[in-house]
Amino acid sequence: MHFIPKHSSARKSSTRTRAFGVAVASAATIVGGLAMAPSASAAPSNVWDRVAACESGGNWSIASGNGYSGGLQFNSGSWRAAGGTRYASAPHRATRAQQIAAGQQLLRMQGPGAWPVCSKKAGLTRSNGLSSGGGAMTASRSMARKATTSKAPALKSVADPMTIRRMQSWIGQQRTGKWSTRTTAALQRKVSAKADGVIGPETVRKTERAVGAKVSGKSHFTAPTMRTLSAFVAR
Image 1: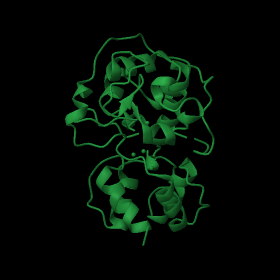
Image 2 (image 1 turned 60 degrees about the vertical axis):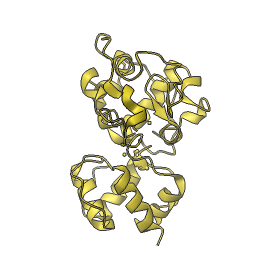
Image 3 (image 1 turned 30 degrees about the vertical axis):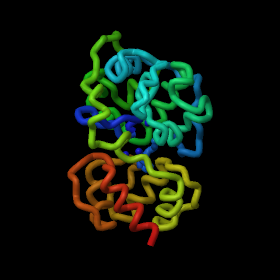
Image 4 (image 1 turned 90 degrees about the vertical axis):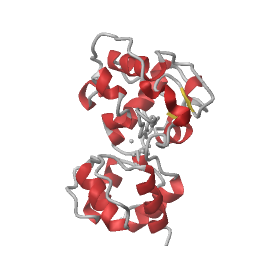
């Protein structure tokens, strides 16, 4: 599942931030608009097999009981944000193609950083992740198996719909409760960041300052930042 997935999952060594996208995020739905559900017919790329090999050992139906499931290790929040519930109630119940479609939506929302460790190992980029191309499969496993001891949140920043709606009111956007590139661009204009619709260090830094959060220096919205944002827009 930065919202928002990571995605969706953040681990001690593999922090998944799937959105603020995370919500804000993602949350994936994480993009002509989160409101636009991803298509399961999106052409799968072998790069996603490499991500899955790293995240889950390539097991697309895994449900380990630690809050993350499926080949790309979404948690429930990132799965919803990425539009995954259109296919199945949980990631591991969806097909490989459906999980990749949700992964592509999350990639649009948050970029490869939604899988901070495994995207690097797999060579995932926006370009190859959203195209039909991909490299050869490699069987690397993620250090993310330490998920149960991780202090990092899944997908670092997938916000709940209520927080997204409140944030949308703050930035002057229609209250859809869904995150999109337009939502990102509206937030960027609100905090005087470059309005390119892509969450990066400048957007995160300026948003953190605007809502009174500790400046993290990250390129995605962390859980503490999202909590501060949620409290700020709820005032």
